[in-house]
Image 1 (cartoon, rainbow, N blue to C red):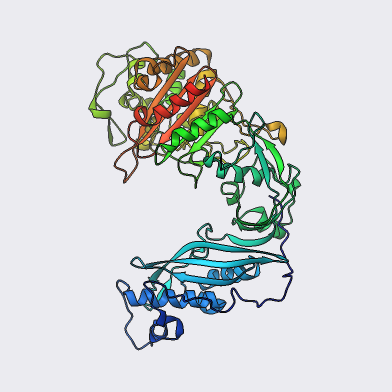
Image 2: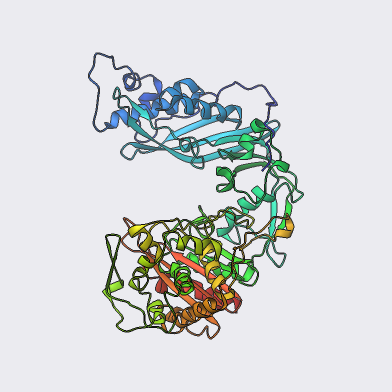
Length: 574
């Protein structure tokens, strides 16, 4: 995004405070109205003398009520200094609360507290956003938590930007004015408009498209109340003097590249520019339908021969796990590891390969699911059944950076240079040693991926060459797509495809992939996560010129949870 033109005029004379006169009782259920009008509880909250012993231990209900009431009353009346003094970060609170009135142009604020839950008090916010001749009502819910200050025991509001608005993160700003970025009208590959009404998963994607292409697509900005992320060009541009021409469109810099600015309220509509994407309307609809059946599921489909992204969906719409998730991929990572072992002559499809119940490396004892073993079996049998020890047993023959190099050079992972058109996490395969090195071979340890990464991995295995996935064609903005420094050798690719075909036909992926052959391949995965009863279930597969991957968090075995989602996508695209 470019530099936002900060508003400097207010249209009509208004007091330089957050809100006007108190319009409603702040002490809603659980707070007590007496606190609003100078009752003893408010005065007592901050009047302890130095002679009194420092309070410690859990907060009382009265302390929580009086502290919350003091803060909300001061905020509502426009007394920024008093409101900030009721928090444990006076400077940050003063800055954001001042900006609430002077930069966000929010006035006539009414705060209504609701029933507290232990030390947390939820509250409703109503106000008016007034910019020049434009006004629009604003209403939302937030909450605050009261904590005890260690040095004197005083109860204070635990300050975070989210207290002011739940969409804010610490360091963010609220600004009303002519938006720094015009809206965009995103189109699917057939020319149809992409909207969140039709495709609920695409909210974060559409935000990302606007962030990157709003100014380039020919639109005109409207007037909006927006969250400006810390480190974004809107927040920093005026300070560092950079223009759009100074920035590299393929380089990821600043927090906003991963977390776009967000529109909270539109006072006047802008004129959108148009951005065409590679999404297939039919496949996007299928993806949305499939993930909606799970509480935390994500899926991506791409075209291996080109890298075009055909569908992306998440059952939770607040974060784009499919593109930006950072999760251990479990045994789906064995695709990368298998290619490494074949390259180094440490494994071959039809050669005998050890799959014992246990394998120890770096002081850790690894085992297979249900402690199974395969006596006298081949590497193909171990791969198809997802034998952990078949991979762990080879750790002693590998250098610490071998897996990292294979992931980066052949599969394009972990370089932080993908330029798909919206923010992504490009996978991470750090150099590790000892037990963590062994765990990385089976997609645990420090390895982190998302469905976009794993769809790309199986697509690379299918074609032999990494083609960076993309959502917006690179011709739109002349950006350079990431490339691998080498392709799979013909022999390694042939063996890898055979492993994946066999797994889809007769291994752990067979049930989900039934009826999709013969030009297909798949790999299942289950990734253990600390403090989770069930592992995350992973599945990645190809059929013809389609590749897809999915994850169901806390789902269990990938073949049973993510497998049906991926298979449904492949069937829909056939």
